[in-house]
Length: 199
Image 1 (cartoon, rainbow, N blue to C red):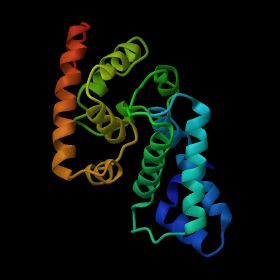
Image 2: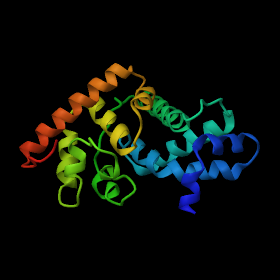
Image 3: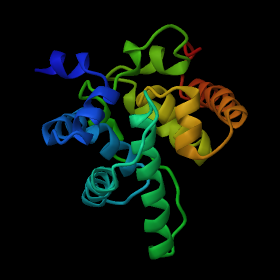
């Protein structure tokens, strides 16, 4: 069933949902629900809150049935979730900060492994294995919130520059800058921890 899910693209599934096929929407939730919950947990204090906002993000799209540009469902979904986090923090009078606390166990389960990506993976590819996961997370926590979120979206959630910029509501130039600075800072932090083969 997993191969069937990956063969049908998001736009096709969303179009099927718009014509009344609710099972197509269920398939989109299966495809992105866990990854979106992990992304949301980066902002929130509990998995329950992250799960609630994940469900709310999907529900908003399901109810509103917005027109979504071809190939942009994932970016639209994450942008919706990102906006829900901002609203959550406005209501709770807290500052929105992207954190990776408690991610080392979840990220090691195989569904978000940046080593599977194409060439030029930066420090992630050489550092992401069982004995180094904790060090990578600790180093990521030391860099700025925006850099950390950009790295997460681009490497872990495998978004394009354009989609990462859309979700974070910043320019492509700023994303390029955040990723360049983030990779450099992460490499420096990894080197402090004795990981010198990061590139």
